[in-house]
Length: 149
Image 1: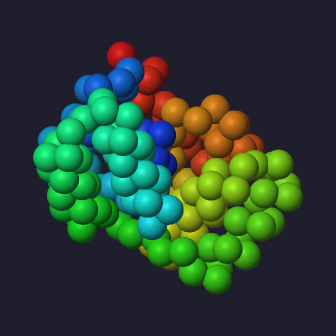
Image 2: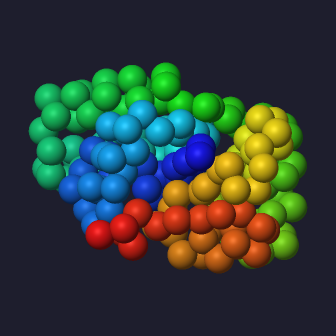
């Protein structure tokens, strides 16, 4: 099973939130993981916002950023390509998704196609409920790490 992490799930790797334990399990078990360049950017931005708000200091920010990039290097990666943008536009129109959510949904769908995975071989991992609903309507398996408490 390949777990595609959107930013709402992936950020739990670096900050204690509901669902953090389940996310850590996937990394410890070396489960196959995937994600989008957008997710990498979103998690980095979340870390920077926490640094600027004083929730973490500069050293902790750099430590998390290094770990994030190390994790990213082990992912099945989907870049922001014209194909992703085109599919995102269609999904945004179909499901009335926010822009980032449409990119995440397009990315997981394209990754599934590129790897020629069966329906039950890839799961979108998200804590975003609008994305979850759209992904289910699109025929994907979805799990919320917050429900794995």
